Amino acid sequence: VPHLKQEFGEEFEVVTTRHYIICTNASPAYARWCGAMFERLMGAFRTHWRTRKLDLHDPKLPLVAIVFADAKQFAKFATKDAGPAIAGAKGYYSIRTNRMVLYDLTADGKSKPATTPAAVNRKLAASPFNVATVVHEATHQIAFNCGMHTRYADNPLWLSEGMAMYFETPDLSSRSGWRTVGKVNVARLTRFHDYVQKRRKANALVSLLSSNSRFAASETAEDAYAESWALTFFLIKTRRKEYVDYLNRLSKKTALIWDKLDSKLKTFRASFGDDLELLDRRFLQYTGRLGKR
Image 1 (cartoon, rainbow, N blue to C red):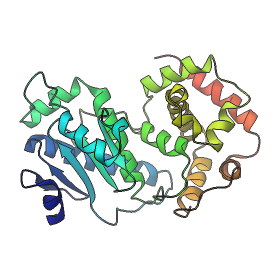
Image 2: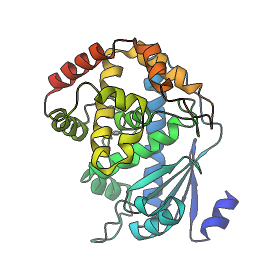
Image 3: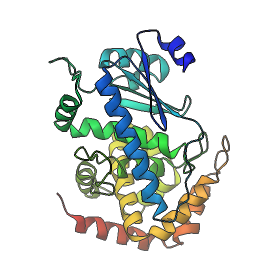
Image 4: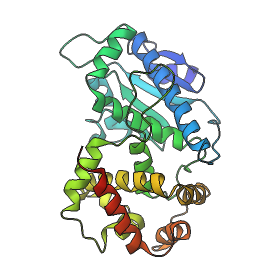
């Protein structure tokens, strides 16, 4: 805690919860909201996978979140810490520092930031997409600290991003549970349905599983994210045992060892079988039945 004060200055307060250290110059009400939301997500994440026979553990150290008072301060810090491309985001998780970096989403520049718990909830309920972004980054941090992913390992991006999107349906009405885990992510589903019209059936699944390149190109990134959510949703709902086996295999990856060209595909086939064409057909049938919502 002292080193955070030293790094960010005396105007920053430190709020602690069971699993988190939140260093912030936002309002105390917003800091408390973040702490409560993070803890609910942590509990929901652990419970969800425990009931599906995946053994995760508590973080070995408290998880750090930096919460700035507004978007301008966030952008200035993010540009130096993670690069200018991140400056316009609502938040991010850094594998390098193992920190979440966020800002007060109620400080929209049009009105004063919320200063009471009720006002925070009221403002955020009007912008669930913004909250979903925070949940997405918090899920990344949990997954990398509870034994699901190994930091600095060659993790498939479709898997880590698909996992974060699977949890990014926030439950703003509950004070304790998280009833919306695994709910259809309408924005991602809609994007995927649009993408299916131009999807190259023969190569799309294999390219997603074997390479992270589609996430790196601006013209394909959004479709890759949508397909990653759809594939994650399909596998968890219809191939749960195989999916948990796959997660267990990936959790044993070694940091700083990069996969050979075809090993990502081999690992996937080891859990789900060799017939990827059949899996792809069933995947498209299943997501097609979900329909546009």
